[in-house]
Length: 142
Image (cartoon, rainbow, N blue to C red; front, side, top):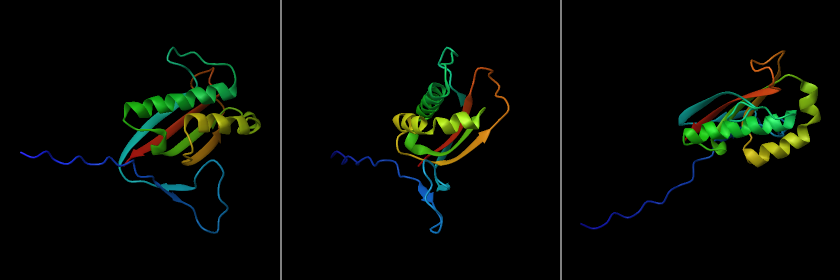
């Protein structure tokens, strides 16, 4: 019996960014994403490590929260490129705004150049008292 030819593996299809032509291009997020496939919903991730220890500072906690999202995605066979939505909950909007440049570098180091639809919300309190932020995410595997 002849061997079947090997199929080439294709990279996952990129999701379609939805950007009205007359709107200014957003920086660091998308206004909308059109996705098709299997959804992965990542519950709110705070900036603690696997032993539930928080680093000091907003940016280190953001980095850890993003790394936690990547770890959950990995469990579902997904990568940061599959992210289609993120919601950031922060205790202090001014702290977020002051750290934007550094946060952008940390985001790209952990997530890459994928900028899904995002929302940023200031809240009065998070469940974990030491948490300065919490991030929810949704990914779609094609």
